[in-house]
Length: 363
Image (cartoon, rainbow, N blue to C red; front, top):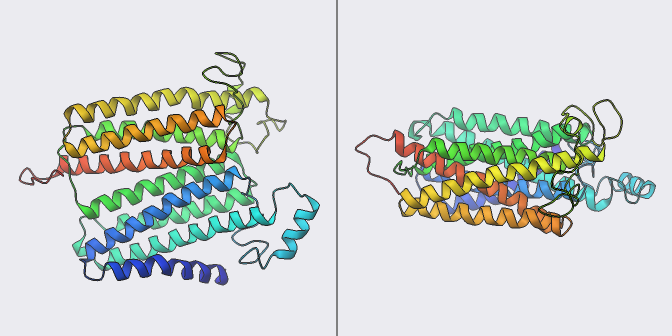
């Protein structure tokens, strides 16, 4: 544990040093906004790398937690990894998979340390903040919870419900960091569009991400071949009962037998069908922003439109091109970007709606 903590601290010193040098002459609030922006960027990277870890079947590359066979790095666990790889050359433990899994953990620890520094700094300048430093503390508590999800992802052998919760926990962390960042920057927008409407669209995107996580964790991406039909049928045989039984092991049905193929079809098709709802909500919001919005809102509309189209293209590529990793990573990153943009927009609109009438800042 001490070795792992030392390695995480050493790596975290790189962004912290850059932040400290770049923000020496800035106000305390601006420095905290910059630190949150760095943490937000690394959290986005962590989500994408987590998807890469899952897509390369590296989630059990080191079958214990938090280290690798009780060591701080795969280098120290060389003998154990070699023995596991020799026993199962295509199994869950190889040198490449061990490094992918441990890099994911190192990055997660760096994000956790940056959030810890942010929380401490928030308490130090609490009189200058627009909200209570408890917000930063909640983020710190949540990253600890997220770390526990990561632990149980490994120790429970990729239990689908835990893996999906781990993904959603990362998205919630992203939302918390975006909200903090916007509160520090203080950029209210004139409420020409209701922030509640944006939250409603965001909720639809989050449901779609949860369904996508369920598809990925159950390896149901290729359960439907072809588009727009599924396996040559508009409504193929499905088993939603087994597919959406949450408390079960990977590949197993709730009663302990193997998960039927029809269950995977149901999981995939649910994600595909709800995509129409989420995409429709984004299109509706984009039209509202462009019709009633200022230049700032039009920029948000453009960003949302481009991200939605990119999501559509990467999602179709996963089906048509048989799940290439590049397309799958783009799909995961695009979903996280959509959440970030929608959260930023909702936060700024809400700030504009609750600002005093005399406050004319709208950009």
